[in-house]
Image (cartoon, rainbow over all chains, first blue to last red; front, side, top):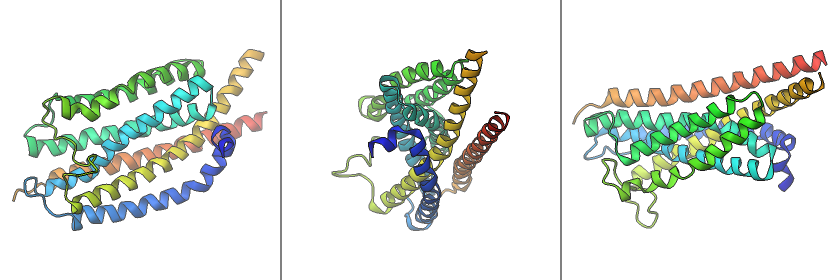
Length: 241
Length: 44
């Protein structure tokens, strides 16, 4: 089992098998989640129908942090142990994490306008998520900035490991600072301050996004593996000539 | 109760259009890299 995750070729074969199944599962969860969000979930007594925006906002926020952790852990394994698979997985995950962070920021802003009366405030939660967005952009820029792709990988990996400091800041920003953003309501598993009828659509939408992430990750992993092969070939060619 | 349809529509449209675009671009990225590899294999 250990070899599957270290050998990129074997992981690629496993990915090819998993890819269609992940797409199907994600689609089923998405249809069910959308039905729950629009027809099952009750109208919030304060937010009205605007609560339905949170069924895409919160799952994308969770995923933006989860994908960043995945990216940073893989970057660490790539840097320390020189695992090609880890580097490739990190490269593949970055644009997906960037997209989910953008979705989180934009949907939050669209929700904030009718609820808070403003598109944006520089409070601790919103600003720290914006910083996360810039860490993703920085990672991608560093990857593309070097003619020697291995150098780019090393610098971007270091940046992503530094950026992990931002994750607890995002998580606890609503507890330590006086923010306009509401405190955590789901992560308190002992007593979540959200009604079960609203919790179920949130979880189903999260699962749908999670499977979608895995599906896109596989697509990009396969592409990055091929690009790596081509880059190594090119480097050998230039060294020989 | 206030009507928030325009905000809901804007949020869901942005979300799903970005995800569709991401899948589309990832598929193009994969097929282009496969083409490149095939060309290199052909040319030796």
